Structure formats: structure tokens, C-alpha cells
Length: 245
Ligand SMILES: Cc1cc2nc3c(=O)[nH]c(=O)nc-3n(C[C@H](O)[C@H](O)[C@H](O)COP(=O)(O)OP(=O)(O)OC[C@H]3O[C@@H](n4cnc5c(N)ncnc54)[C@H](O)[C@@H]3O)c2cc1C
Ligand code: FES
Image (tube, protein in one colour):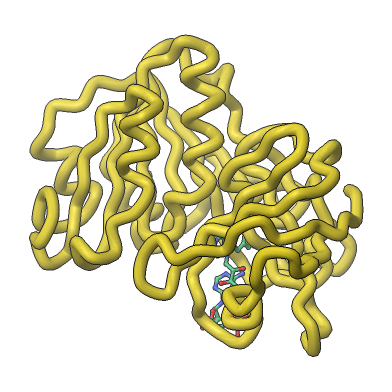
């Protein structure tokens, strides 16, 4: 874990109330996709956990949705402003668990951490199918970025204004997608439905309200088949087989 003060390079909207923030600074503590950072927000005691969307030697990119005061304060940041974050938090997606064909399922802003995962899988010459779910066409984001990586991308929207009408699990049922292993991130009801619908093994990235974000306070504990686990330290990525819904 490393505390870093980053400089904002970009902070632009990518969908309604959703922003892509590119930060310059020391990313040496960030290893892999699935990890998150704890962002400090002025006037708030608790930091806000946000997944690593993309990362290289000099920049970290986050994609976040404004849902309350903390994320609203982030959205007000301008190029040149500073953002303090604890980096190198959480475990990561297991890219070696996929033998050849990966299925990535994202819901809403839960799509964000799947992008770096997709880059890592492509670097290992793995074939990727991505299914992204949103409420409306207006909310669809990042689909073009997955396509640029060579992924086959399907969209589901609740109102049918883009792609298949319904949930990501409806796309899974209708399209004949071949895969060996799946990775999912999104709202809990979506993850539960995905785990029930997929065949075979895979893993999901969970969200819980967090205190310390580093394993000390046990505020993010969940029950699993292997006993209590901390989402911030033992997760946020958990194997499907481990989870109790
Ligand atoms: C490991 C992890 C990774 C995350 N990655 C992202 C990301 O990449 N992009 C993104 O937009 N959001 C992400 N989140 C959720 C994000 O942390 C919350 O949306 C944020 O903390 C809300 O802060 P706020 O001050 O704006 O809202 P608050 O005023 O704190 O809360 C507003 C609303 O959001 C809900 N909320 C707050 N925190 C969480 C949380 N941790 N999980 C679920 N619901 C919450 C509250 O219940 C409330 O309804 C992640 C959460 C976790 C635990
Ligand atoms: S948030 Fe403190 S242990 Fe997870």
C-alpha cells in the first residue's frame, strides 16, 4: 500500500453523471486489474474506494459515477488539481484461471475494472467476449474501448434502446457465447443472476461500504462458504464457488 498525491490530467464525462479521471503520479504500488484505490475527499473522514480502470508506469485512470457528496467533489476536480489516494489495495483478477476464451460481464460503472483486465487477457493472447448492461443507450460507455482491444462486445439495456432488451444474462441466453471462464463486476443482483446463469467457473468483483479499505477495521466483512472474509483485503475479487448469496 502506498499513499500518493496525484495530479489530475483529465476529468471528463463519459456517460450521464459518470466521469473518467486520468491522474499522473507514482503508480508503482499498483500491480494488476481488480485492485482499487482509496481516494481522499476534502471534508470527508472516510476515503472512497474506486477500482483501477487503467494504469501504466506514470498514469492511473478511474471511472466513477456521482452518487453522493464524495464523488460529486471528485467530479469538480480540474486538470492540475491534486488527488490523494492510497494505492495497491485489494487482490486481483486471476488471468491464469482462463485457459483461452474469457467472458467479461459488466453492469453500469462496474464495467470500469474490466478494461484493464481485458488488456491483460489480450496480452496473453486470450479471446474475449464482453457483455455490458446499462439502463439506457445514453448510459452505454467503454464499449468502443473494448472493441479497440479486439473483443466481441454485446450490449444489453433495460429499455431496449441499445442492443438486447433486458439483462446481461438475457444476452448470455440468446447469443451462443463460447467461453472457458468468466469475470463479472456490477451491482449485487446482477452478480447473483450471473453466477446462477453461467456454466463453469469464474470470479466476481464485489462492492461493500468500506472504512479503512486496508484490512484493519473489518467493516467490509461478508460471509462466504470459507467463513468471514474482508472485501477490501481478501477481495474485492472472489471465486463464484466461494460466495453465499
Ligand atoms: C472495491 C470497490 C470498488 C469500487 N469501484 C468503483 C468504481 O470504479 N467506480 C464507481 O463509480 N464506484 C466504485 N465503487 C463505489 C464507490 O466507492 C461509491 O460509489 C462511493 O464511495 C460513493 O461515495 P459518495 O461520497 O459519492 O457517496 P455516499 O454519500 O457515500 O453514498 C451515496 C450512495 O452510494 C452508496 N455507496 C456508497 N459507498 C458504496 C460502496 N462502497 N458500495 C456500494 N454502494 C455504496 C450509498 O449506500 C448511498 O446510497 C467501488 C466500491 C468498492 C467497495
Ligand atoms: S474496510 Fe476496513 S477491513 Fe475492509
